[in-house]
Image (cartoon, rainbow, N blue to C red; front, side, top):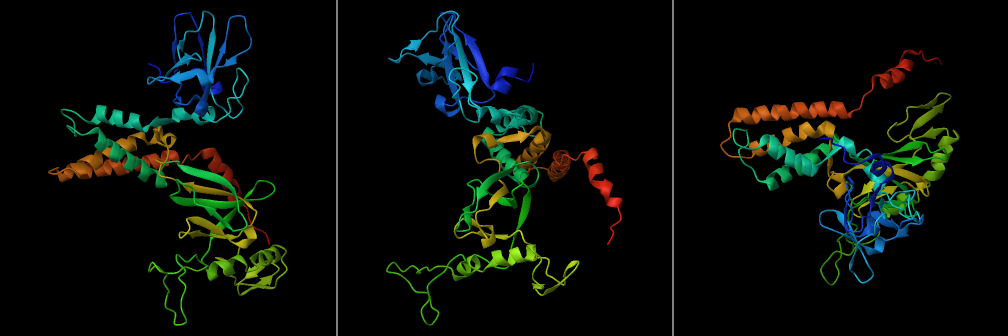
Length: 392
């Protein structure tokens, strides 16, 4: 049985066509992308009658059944049976619009499905594990599906941090307040860069030059925090953040770029650059700090109005379409789940637990090698210039 369930029109154009016969009133789609309960969310329905080249938008008169099939409804709510030679088109929404009707099926459902064959759904991982590893005569004789689900989610979380390609990114503009909110599914940052006029990234680095205080209590003349009527500490504005936001850093960085100053951070400028400078703070791309008190990322004032790319990792469980596993990591997922189940059960032989632990580590290491995506030709291209002599 073939593993591909979509034809080329479904995959590339996001559309599937049915022909009415005068008796059929329910049409089952075979998209990899689940249809939403509200057709406006990720698909539209168009109908063209015999001899007509115009497709009528039937989206508002569509109901989605529990099995993923659709029915057309008349204005009074009765089920509509399309006549013979009537064409019914289910069109997933795409960035460029639909291919039928008035071409207003705008969205991202089609694009989100591209490349999906390289992944396996988390539900499929759980089902495959229960079939292959659980039963009479197997290492795990019996286990609840909910237990497998828990360990599968834990595996996906752990793999997302340093193994899977689960990095996300956002393009943002730094506002005058020099802070942007941390993304909703953020776990840790990977890279933050500002984009120049040519679209080239320039890395922004975390700084130890300043910090964002978590609380700023108002103190009396003796330095004692004061309280309000509810006995909570009164909070003031951070002087540290105010000074950092108005420190003239933009002027300093512009001068460095123009090679005008003779000193910076205790270093001396020579014809070859800075001598004796602190390389940790001597860069002109700007800095950022993680403001845990406000749940924001704060930037130095020379980056105001800059376009930035925020690259970060999530845990792979934030939204439904995240819960998928690269097929290159599938075997490591099974090994992780198997070890987790056996190691948390009582009266298990220690040699078995250790064997499964070694297998888990080995398969995880193989997965990291596979997902590193190293190509010999690319390594050769990088290494070609390494033998060149530097001339002064």
